[in-house]
Length: 358
Image (tube, rainbow, N blue to C red):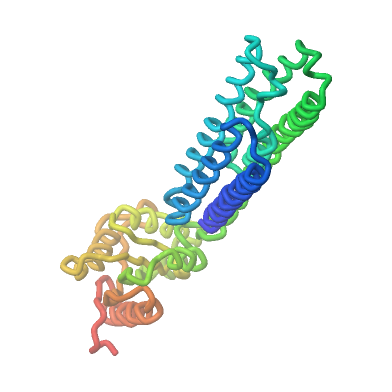
């Protein structure tokens, strides 16, 4: 959970940087064309439209980064593609038809195109990077193709500029992309192993329910508004089971107890092994009208049917009041007092905490 949250934070931060850098790039070109106006209307309008679109995307993303992340990425990619690919292809097609010279009419916005595409390649999520490479290919390959077949335009200052711009950029893109894919694959393996190690560290190795560490991490995910009820469950006379049948059989009993506990309560809850033969169950926002029966429900379900290895056994249950999750330790103490009362008054019963137990 924590690793996933960290990945989400990194992705959000990266997208903020992409949008911010794109906005700065567009601002630079707007200032440039303000002081040095171009004779082509496209050179004046395009940077302004792109800048306003990036600003709108940045505001939209800022409102709710987590909820708007995917839509913002899709919109940004669409913006880059629609802003540069169709116009560039239009100028190339018209040049092939002899309507004008490409080096004279191709807008001097290749720099901003390169900036946005490299930013996207470096920072956008892996699934979207292929669109960045494809977009750049659609612009760069036809431009190279045209210049190769029109050497008179190639051997000009503008022709050399385009070759020097697109050539190294293509090399960078097609070297970085597979390299990043390999690095990402390696990072995914590391992340998977870390998640698996974290999950294993949070669970009891015998019963596969939470251990105390895992339960603490689970509790940290709750909000202040969540109400919880704590139940402690203790297997009656468990020591005699170990003494009579051996610790291996005792372990099997604990595994079966934990397995049964998973199929008793289906609302939001957590089960953990609290220590030895004692388990803890935490219900989140239980319905008050049925809360009084929850402890008995666990006690009956765990005591009614015989167990595979030892036959009949019983459990004692102590249940706390319902209160805010911030008061977990107080509720744990209540459940512990209720369990103590149940064990010292005949066992095989469920007791709900009240002030008289104190």
